[in-house]
Image (cartoon, rainbow, N blue to C red; front, side):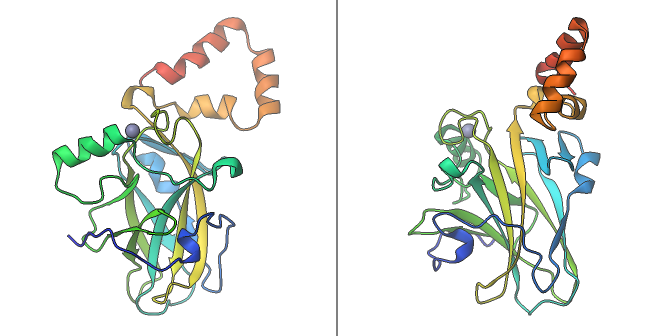
Length: 235
Ligand SMILES: [Zn+2]
């Protein structure tokens, strides 16, 4: 498996405060996350553009372009903190989960939060200046679509690093020379298996704060208690 933690130039994709603006670019770069919710232990809220997943559970991200790409184009995935206050900090695995992975395998990218499943062409990078971690795979040659299976190796609630702070996954489409051709983002929350919230919970409570408060106000007390328990129930 091609794996390496190596120095790469200070590409805009892995800069100190990476760009998160959606950018289809000249090739019409798009993500399709709809297939995720058909899998166990992971689901996708289109309204929130947010993936809810269990740690180490991989899910497919389908990437599409409208026009043929330059040969050698790649897909890069990188995590950043969503809140601008923390955007300059690097997202990593916590030491506990990093050590778990080191103990169970001989990978040299155990500190990377985002990892790729089932693609021997995946390459792991650590930018020596910004310390940003990222993983790349080639965009399938002569094709207008590529599917990459990602998994997240730490909990959002882990005390070290994420510490309940929301993260965005930035997916950049890059030319062989590192030029960003397109950029898409989605939010991710990672849970222990028995704490993954049900879609119904998020539809009811998270879509927006004002409607959330309004709905809670109108719920009978027993309904509220039942819905509130979704966070600690098996789905
Ligand atoms: Zn952790």
